[in-house]
Each structure stands twice: as structure tokens, then as C-alpha cells.
Image (cartoon, rainbow over all chains, first blue to last red; front, side, top):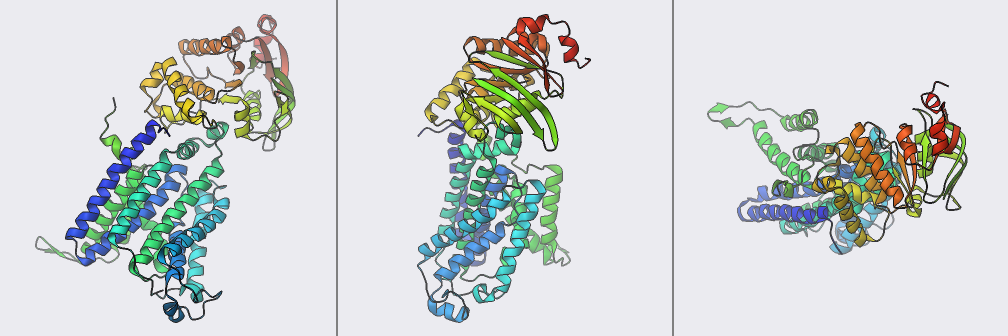
Length: 341
Length: 234
């Protein structure tokens, strides 16, 4: 199989990003405290979500606000499959359909969770991809709210706002770094594939692309399902690391956090997704520290709770106003090294 | 090769073309002339399958009514659309690749891309640049090359001279004449009647969604009132 120029560059770019991710992982495992390790782990989980989001939003340029719901579906599906029967009898005593009477190994559970998320994403996607602009955005918002309501009120299956506990903690920092590297290659691979290029063409000019024989709805659906599967991976690795999940983390706060990451870094490129995730994660930690009212060079700063939420809003607004394409714009990382002739 | 009977084209509730008939024989270059709003682009859109239409469009004897856009391209219909519609954020090379998107012979696609970069060295120099950075004339060349990437049997050219400087227009027409001499079948939509007829075998004059006149290029070119009809004064 021969690669196009774009695909060769894609391989180079993905390798550079993979090196960066692996270095961050190695540094963290050498020097980080337990608390910092958890932060780095959650940053990698968010990175996978943002990469998944990039696959759909970056190539089709439709806005998705339901991604955290699909992360939740992946997390809950895997959690319900993998948790030992004894634990589930306590956690979900009233579960229907014998959900508390079986337990699978982590790999089968993860695969089953991916199949379940994929089927749901496909069914939802059939409607979403036929809409454009604001209509599509509002429809994804509705999906988020519907899924969240089901998590909250079917307490016999999901335990609602209470913690779903007892999930075997089979993931480590190493596993999430490997997963993130694989996802970087998948998302860059999709961007440079024939499907990715045609989808980006349809984002530039939908009618023009249709006249070239590009089947826009089919390509959007492919990107939507792939995106949801990647995001489900993030959900599964979240559950497999923490050992306990609840409905709260899969809602608005997480939607806007990951959206701010993608918008800031630049949604059109995989590099932008990686840059945005690490920049915002780091920035948030600084802001959280400022929130507590620390003493900086002899000045006792006041306590400002809620500053991190304000910062996320500011990042979205300022990026949209001053550089709508995000920091990276249309440039992938390898283009910073290969100078134009 | 292409035979259109009683074609009506609709944009929502508005009927833009009111039952026209025209045909293009293999190896011919046929000009479809007319002023703004005559229904030329609507006709092209209907042939491509991206506009709502009634009547029959037959290509090589097959009715295209139930044939999808992709399959029409697969059967050999390609278009260089009005306003060129270059994908401005994609590289020049990716634009060409999309033109060949329906082909399955992947190894030959790169060879065809390289052939076009040889034909138009300026495109080759800018292969990695976004298509939107090209000049109007370069974009038109790219649009025609992109259409030819699907190795069509008939090429639909929608106003290739639109918005270009006279010197560039001459180059574009020279390229079309070259394609025709190589045996390509062409349906050329133009407002630039004189130059279009110079390189065509046959012409149709369209106005207000109806065919007002037709004939060989010599007949139409000699017709005194044609220019008046073209400008909508009749």
C-alpha cells in the first residue's frame, strides 16, 4: 500500500506527538507525587476525549456537545460488565435483566462497552448527521440531557448521583499513555485518509463536495461513530482507573472543559487537540491554586472560588474572538519542522 | 452520448428550467449559452444529480433518474462547477485527490496527479498549499484538472471564464480546445458566447429557462439577433 504525501506527513506528525506523550508519561512516573499522578492520568483521559471530539468536529466542522454522554455510556457499560457479582449484589440490588448476576473479564467488558456505545452512537448519528449548523448542535445538546437524565433516574442500573463502586482498578498510567498514543495515530490516520479528506472538503463547501460525488451524510456518520468509540475508550479507562464512577462527571462541566481544550488548541488539527488539552489542564491547575488565596511574593491574595469556571469561559470567548481557528490553526506539528520551500 | 428530453429543474417551489431538450454526441463540444438567470447552472446541477428535476436525462442510453451522484461520476460524468468551488482549506493535491475519489485504481491516481502537475507546473509548485491561496486562473485550471481526475467520458464546464482577466480567459479556452482535440466530449456553459462558439460544434441559446435558438456554431455565430437575445433585450 502506498501512502500519499499527506499520509506520510501524518505518520511523521503522529510519531512526534507520540514521543511527546511518552515523555510526559515517563516524567510523571519518575517525579510526580500520587496526587500529581492522578492529575496526569485524568489529563490523559481528557486528551482521548478531545482527540475523539476532534475526529468529528475537526473534520466535519459540526459542533458536538454530547460527547461526555458517550464517555458515560462507555464507562457505565464497562463498569456494569466487569464489576464482580458480590459487589454488584450490594451496589445494584434491584438491577433488572440479571445485570447483577454476571461478571466478565476486563477486556471482554471493554469490547462489549465499545459495541454498545457504537450501536447507540450509530442510531443517534443517523439523525444528527442529516442536520446542519445550529440544528445539529442543539440536537447533540438534547442527547446529552437525555442520557444524563437516564443515568440519574434509573438508579437501579446506574445508581444516579451515588457512586457506582467496586470496579476492578486494572488501568495504570502506562496503559493510558499507550492508549493515548494509539488514539493519536487513529485520529491523525482518519484525518489524512480518503474519508477524512473528503469530509474536510464537505466542510469547506458542502454543495461542491456533493457535486464531486462525496456522500456527506455517510462520511459524517462514519466520523461520528469513530469519534464516539474513541470517547467511550476514555470513559472505560476512567472507570478502570478510579474504580468508582457517578453521573456527575459526564455532564456540562466536562463538556465545556473538553470543548475549551479543543477550541483553544485548534479543532482542525490533531496537534491542536493535544496542545489544547495540556495547556488548559496546566492552566486550570494554576487557577485552582490561585482560587485558594495563596501568598505570592509577599502579597496575600484573596480567596476567589469559581475562578476556574470563569477562566474556561474566557478561554472559549477570547479564542473565538481573536483566533477562531485556535492556536494551531491548520498546521500540524510536523509543519513546524518541515519549512515550506 | 448525453440526451436530455423535456427537462424541468426546481429550486424548492421555483421552476428554473421549463422543459428543455438538448443532446451532446460523443466527441462533440456543445455550448449552452445565455445570460444570468437563464437556467444554465440549474441544467448542469440536474445532470450531476444535485438538483431536483423531472423529465429524462439519458447518458449512453441509460436513464439517470434513479442514479446517485457518485454513480453518475462513476459512469463518466464530471463537472467543473460555477465559481470553481475549490476546497480552499485543502491542499492543491488533496483537491485533485477528491476529484478521483470514486476511483478504485489507487495506484494510477498518483500517476494522474503527477501528470496534471506536469501539465500545469504552477499547480505542482503549490501542491502542498491550500487551494484558496491560488489565483482565479490557477483555481480554474485546478477545477478542470480535478474534474478530469475521475477520467470522465463527458466534461461539464460551468462558466470557466467567470471573473477572469481576458488574457487568462484566452488560456482557459485554449485548454478546452486542447481537450476537445484529444477527443473529450464537452458541455460548455458560457456567457462569453463568441469565444465559446469558436471552440464548439453546436450551440443552444437558453433564456428564462427555455431554449430560444439552436444550431451549429456557424449558424448561431452568424445570427444577428443572437447578441441581443443574449443580453436579454429581446
